[in-house]
Image 1 (cartoon, rainbow, N blue to C red):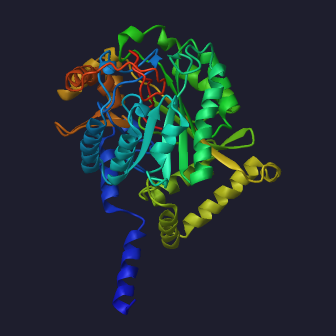
Image 2: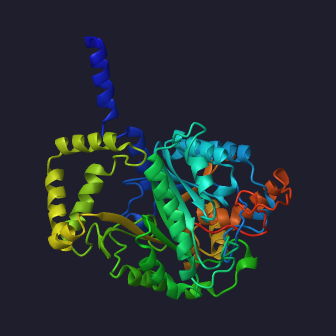
Image 3: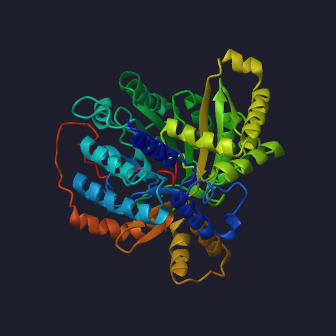
Length: 488
């Protein structure tokens, strides 16, 4: 390599390792400006370390399990799953996200049961999302075989298509039709299925080197509220990096509204999550949108005990949070290869040496909090696990609140005004390339899904094919799809 080639390589390396991407910074500034004043809290992540979550819609609304409740409209299962349609729509929707939300974000491949897509089409959709700078997560009920996972993860040559896969798997006792356990009698009966799902990914990594992240989703109703703690305790070691719980809401197909869902209050659900974790979970250290919609606690297990990354009662830890936003908030972690990310962080540290002192002091406090003896006993095997609760809003509030927002009006009714505030701070958006708009997930499911699925029913009519096979890619039940969290 000549001198000119060396200089060119060094310039390219310098550009690649710049900590801050101006486009990403501008996208976050726009998001911060869009947030209502109530959401601009010291711990707010949106606009300071990300632009929020994104999700697809109208791409494969069909599912082969029957769930109560379900956020999809009654037409969802009259639409056939069509790979080219999915890839086409994902391309258009992600293109709009790329234009309006900048170069980096987490995005969900969601809409129905993702494993009904042929593996190649599923892989193509994930590739499109990555090409648009997104870190994709596929949403599933988890009732598919290992052959499907391998066909998705590995190309025809047997080599990995992706270095990393992310899945959110929904398990709860009110999902009917799962193979081997048609109607679960309780949550505990689903534990073998939860473990089997996670084990498939562990084998995939051992045998083919494909890294993974798994989120566990569960809808909570008065009927399984008292089983939440047991799910957390019994499943903490299975390999899930997130446990997400969604109190059921009155939206979607009203035929599925079987209980007095709101008796499972947000505080009651969070208390059960805490009981399962065996400790208080402080959801005010970091916020994702409106805290009335999302509660999040970031931390790690060491053995059987869970510890927060930051102690909200310690001003020194809150100062660490503030320093993170100040110096690292504009660094794009999503989709950045580990080596490149390390180089970016090193440049920040060189520019701001105080960040190293702050980090070392935080690490020392955390070690003292955990205990050196416990660290040694467990050989430092720390397992990051995040707890999340997403509270969807009822359709009867969302529809009128959204109509007023479209007219630029603020409701005088306190309930509708709260709904408008929460919609304005929504963490989870869906893109509509036809008119260039982004809408909150609750609006999509409460207001837009029925008409959209009715159109899809005409565009992609379901052709019933009866087959003795029981694999998820061929089951054709008249059921509904499980709900997922706005963001995992």
